[in-house]
Image (tube, rainbow, N blue to C red; front, side, top):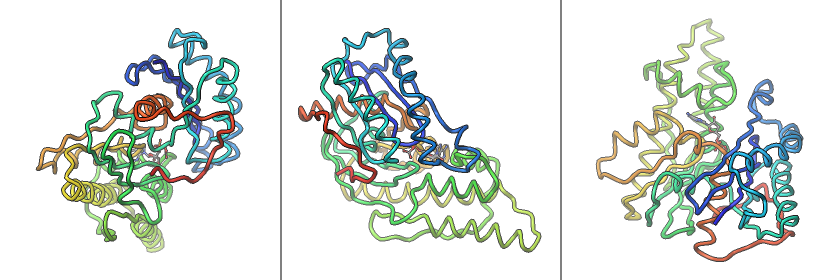
Length: 330
Ligand code: KG4
C-alpha cells in the first residue's frame, strides 16, 4: 500500500510517500525555522502564508524523490488536528485537492498519533505500550492497549515541555528553537543550580513553575550584576525535566503493566532524556525512540499512522474533512 502523507500543523511543510507503513520512499520537510527565528517563535499568520508558497513544491519533490506517479498512490493521509489552524488548513486543502484530482481515499490523522507511529518506521511496535509524547505543543502519557487505541493517562496542566525549552532558551539569549541549543549547552555544564522539582498529581505534568524559576533566577542575577553560567543552568534545567518525565513514565509502566515504551515528539531528540531512559531502565523495558529525522514534524509519520489506522479499521474521510486546532488524541 502506497500512502501519501501531508503534514503542515506548525512550521514544517512536509510531504512523504511510504510503502506498507515501513519503507519511506520520500520524506520532504521544508522547515520555516529561519523565517521564524527572528521573531523568537512561530508567528501563525507567517507560517500559514509560507505553507501556501511551499506546499506545491514540496509535493513535486516528494513524487520526484520517490519515483512514483500520482496515480500509483493508494491513500492520502493528512494531519487534521491539533495545530495552528491556518497552517493545518493549507496542508488539508492540498491533500483534499490531490485526492479529488486523482480520486483517492483520504485518511485523517491526529498529529500526536503521527508522532507515536514515527517509531514504527524503525522499530516493531509491540502492545500494550506506553507512549510518552513530548513536543512543542504537547506533553502526554498515553496507554495503548492495542494498535491505534489511545488512552491518555496524564498530560501537562500548563506549558508543554518543548515550549519550556524554547522559553528558557529565549531568556538565556539563545536561538529558536531552543530545545536543541539548550540540550547541547546542558552537555557542557554541571548541575549546580537548585531548581524546583514540579510535584504534580498522578501522571500529569506542569512545567510553568520550573520555567518561571529559571526566568526569575536569570533576572535576579542580572539585576545583581552577577554572571549567569548558562551551561550549568541549562544542565540543571534538563536534569529536572528529564527526571520528571522518566520517573513518571517508569511508574506508569509498572501500574499499567507494560513492557514497551514509545517516546515521541520533538523533545524525544533530547540527549539527556535518552541517556536517563537508558541509565534508569532497571526493569529492562523495551524503549523505542525515533531517529532525529523522525522525532520532529514530518509527513512520513503521518503516512505510517494512516497505514496502522487502516489496519485497525477502514476509517476514511471525505472532502468535508475539517481542521481542528484543539482535539484530544483519545
Ligand atoms: O514535535 P515537534 O517538531 O513539533 C510539535 O509538534 O510541537 O517539536 C518541536 C519542539 C520544540 O519545542 C523544540 O525546541 C523541541 O521540540 N526540541 C527539543 C530538542 N529538539 C527539538 N527539545 C529538547 N531537546 C532537543 N534536542
